[in-house]
Image (tube, rainbow, N blue to C red):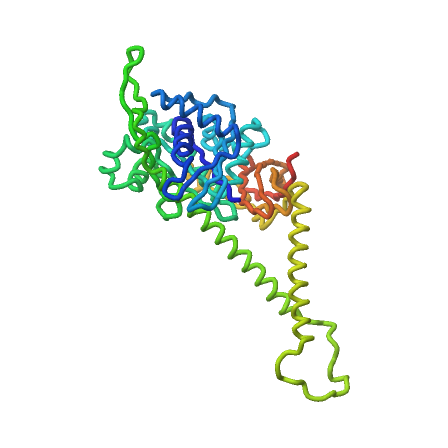
Length: 430
């Protein structure tokens, strides 16, 4: 079944959103239902709901803690996907993507590796964003970190070869209705306050923007002499139905794409088999003529032969699937595909005498394909110059069976004027 991941930085409201969705859809609502698939999930929802219903917010998830929540999402009476959310500290998401540490996963704590694997293994990824982190953030550096975490995570997800779906969800949208009106819509608001994300993903129409208000209404109370905004208890939730149905539609589209790809691959394989020349076919001119060939209805023996051929093709496909499953039950088998020769990159830095760039460097890119089980692999490259200088770079990637990912490695300490020889290898991380 398809996997859906819901992620975001701290303060975007992951806990509240998932709790309110689970509470709203625990019974059929407009054709949507969420069924908890673990006792841990059910207990977590009940605990958070008790806090919200008491007029307070749940505490933030401590950094380093990880809680896996799991529902089965039903749309129009049929199960469509596994809906999963990792309750993690938003700081962990920020560290993984804003600091780009996802490129060196083998050196990171286990919970960060699990988070990266969770996102990379998902078919549909919902990225949550709180507009207060952009429209109301006075710290320009913090605002840039928030935006880059989302943008780089989308880049990392969408560069993978298999079909994926992503969306950008603005949480607590009830507090930004006037801002939406001024900008002319949620997409225009994203263009103004998240320009990197908008230009790279939203503007092309491949990543939709959805606004939700999980609680739907708040009130201001005074506690310990300080005003606080808390749930008002009316639960006028907005946008949850739209988000759930977008997830269901995205999963259906992905399933249709996968079926079309599989059908095309089978058709191409059969066409290739029919086009293969029969080198050992007998020379009929050396045989005695036995009379004209009848051109009427196919004989019973012809139909029997056709049935046998069809059965043989089915058995062959089943055998290939079985062999693939046997292989994938072991470990990843990484294969480097299409590595480029070393090329130079220019960061737009200063130019020295005689128009010589001072900050250019060498790089290599390519793809790595996994012919085995899902797991982590390391792409490692060594660049050597004739002068004796060497530099090594590596990146860790999580690959599903049959998946192909792009990589690019930069060598910034080598002398720019001497083109290096680069050796690229991929190994399994144990």
